[in-house]
View (spheres, rainbow, N blue to C red):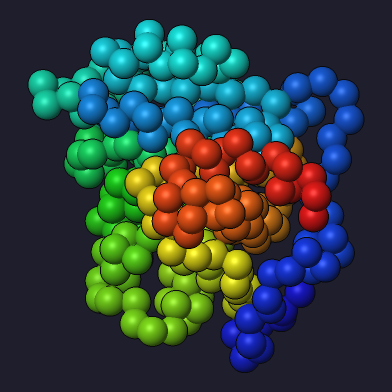
Amino acid sequence: MPSRSDTPPAVITPRLLREWPLPDPQGGKESRGTVLVIGGSRVTPGAVLLAGVAALRAGAGRLQLAVTSSTATALSIAVPEAKVVGLPETDAGSVSGEVPDHLLELAAEADVLAVGPGLDDVEQTARLMRAVLGAAAKDAAVVLDAHALGALSRDAGLLADRDLRAVLTPNLTEAEILLGRGPGEDLGAAARELAARHRAVVSLYGHIAAPDGRLWREESGDAGLGTSGSGDVRAGIVAGLLGRGAEPAQAACWGAFAHAVSGQRLAPRYGRTGFLARELVDEVAYTIATV
């Protein structure tokens, strides 16, 4: 493990991961955690599907999906392995910040909450996050992605003073919003700054930083990972690994590797930029199993 901010990043390799093995839960699905994915909109329910199925492929035991009511039935058919609940939506089709009791009950019981995939209204998302993070158990883990990061940029208190294990998974645009400036060429330094500011693990474009200054770099990623929906897959992988018991930095490092190497596996069939995010999902379990 790299130690602190004065040390260079450790490169994530199969050897590093083998020396940092994932928990191997025994028993039934309960031992691998319940992941609750909250996201989507009337026009982007697929983001929740990608994140949720990726969580299962990464080893989560139980999956729950919370999406706009107008898309819940279709999503429950598309992902029969999940419990799917509908949420109030605005006239524009966004998830409403008016949080129903049934979502708060799920949030209170979940081991991992993944918030953000497919959400498209920052103000409504901020209201949603205040409610569900307030209801979450003290030892629950949280993955924030997409518009959830936009909400965090406006109100850092959404994570402050909460005993939650958090992982932020920004892309470059979301990192700029969180930082209030461009991340620059040193993405490791940008990830470290965000990790220290929010007291969370940050996974930024292959650079993973912990709040204590530790830093890792994943070097297997290629241009094909820039495909639509790829970030939702990455967030879901991290959530699934947290569900099976990984610590936040470990989940982020294993998740970055699984995401990147799954793309490598697809490249011989589809080329460097021809594969789809849904195809990444299908490679995740094998990639993790063969480290």
